[in-house]
Image (cartoon, rainbow, N blue to C red; front, side, top):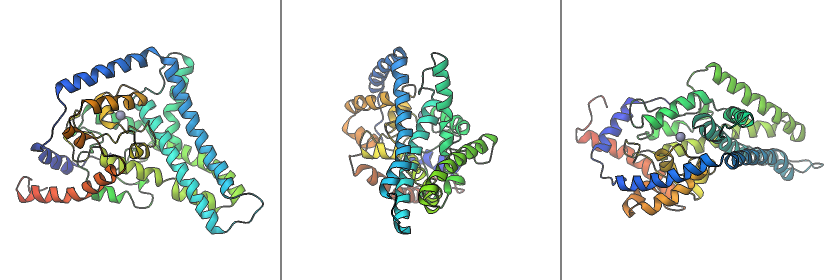
Length: 355
Ligand SMILES: [Zn+2]
């Protein structure tokens, strides 16, 4: 993701005097002690852990197959002529669900397997093979893992600095709105899933993604005609999952302190956490993930309950969102707050002239 130096400068000024109740050393110690217990379980149960990884991948590809080839046939039964309107609606529904499932699979693959290397514990030839395969499955969904991984690791290790590979603490709404343009996934600079230029690896990703969709598209074309795969794969697939991903990254860190300990929110185990992250492996408990990135997704969820119990009411307001209406309120607040903050910083002379 491209770093915008002016956003980092604005974030530094904004957070300098930000009234914020951060986590205390004692809270962090108690949290880390529980995380260590879970990590020891993870290390001690490689077969159970690897079996969970296989089940999740089977679930994701099974769900995608069901959406594309069973749900579509249920919506458009054979032996009957369907109007273009019904084909369009069925294709839009199946294409959107396919996009969501692919987004979910891609996060699981590129984040959990390729980057943090916790999807499979490599204890033998079979698990090493599974790790390699799982690490590259994200390419089917158009995600290039090498670029993502380098920048994501820098995001964890150099959080809130010039070297943060995904600086998200001050994302101006304009950059977010531009991701709503058609096919913005291919050209916006507010994206982390592929490099800005066509490297060899990005071309490989494009070839894999196009080949997969041509293959599925052929069967859908045979069954329903050209309109169905065009709507599902050209209109819905490149947008639905991407919009969720952008909404997630626009709200996870925006306007939070520039330090790893206090710099992330957790959307939690409710609807928004699951929806925006593409499922429970999409880091809905994002603060916990930043505090201990070594544990797998299901331990992040377990740590969420523990962290909640340690937080003061004020900290809960800062780090968590209310059920149901909490995330939409946060999204609207961020859209409103940015222009006010920039205006205030300018009028108080806190910003250098070039900003
Ligand atoms: Zn991570």
